[in-house]
Image (cartoon, rainbow, N blue to C red; front, side):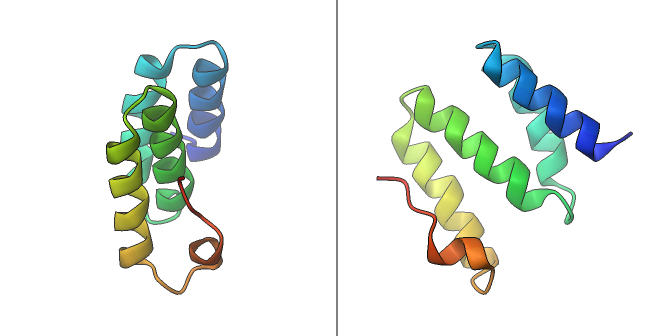
Length: 79
């Protein structure tokens, strides 16, 4: 169970236009404190690309509220 390898596999699936294969792996990683940010932002990107802008926005806003002092909070925005 290597989280970096799982993240790389999820990225590969997204690159191959297989977001349905990437999402469950990212959901699992999002439960890990050390990978929550990476996985959550990738999940939001999948939702946004799939036309689910409101879901993507809600996911990012939830992350921002949960971790307001993280550096990404200053620059992340889904428009």
